[in-house]
Length: 176
Image (cartoon, rainbow, N blue to C red; front, side, top):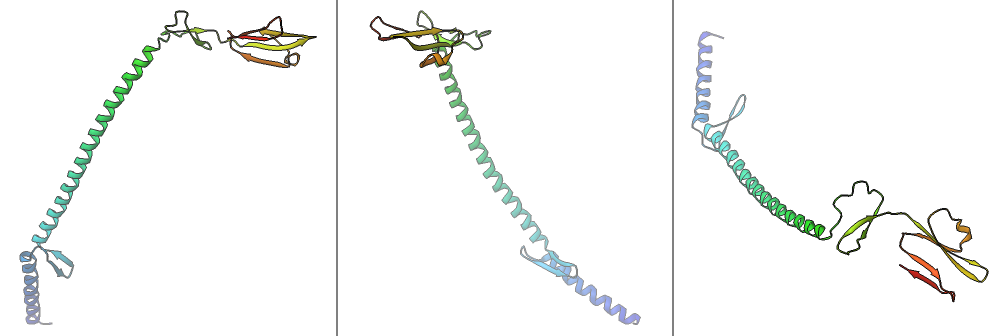
C-alpha cells in the first residue's frame, strides 16, 4: 500500500463513520443504527425506552400503593372486629362469675356455689358405685377406697354427689 491509498481508505472510513455517527445522533425515537460493534440506539430511542420503563414502574407503584391501601383498610377492619369479639368474650366470661384465684386448685372441678350465682372449686375425687346381691337382698355400695370389681356385677366410677340406695321393697333409688 501506498501513502496515497492509505489516505484514501482513511478518508473513506471517516466519511462512512461520519454518516453512521450522523444517523445515530439524528435518528428518530424508533431507530437503532447498525455498526461494526453491533446495533446502537439513537439518543431519542434511548430516552423513549427509559421513559417507558419509568412509566411502567410508576403504574406498578400505583397498583402496589392501591393494594397496600386496601390491605391496610382490611387489617384495620379486622382489628376492629377482633376488638369487638374480645370485648364480647370478656363480658361473657365476667358474667360466669368464675373464681378469680385458682392457685393451688389443680385437679379440682368447678361446681355451682350454694348461692347459685357463681362457681367454686371442689375436690375431683372419684367415687365407686356398685351393686351386688346378698342372698335375696340387693346391696348398694359407694365410697372411696379399694373395691374388688369382681364382687359387683354392676359397678361404675363417678363424681361425688351421686347417691343411690335400695329401698325396703327392693327398688333402686338414685339421688343426683
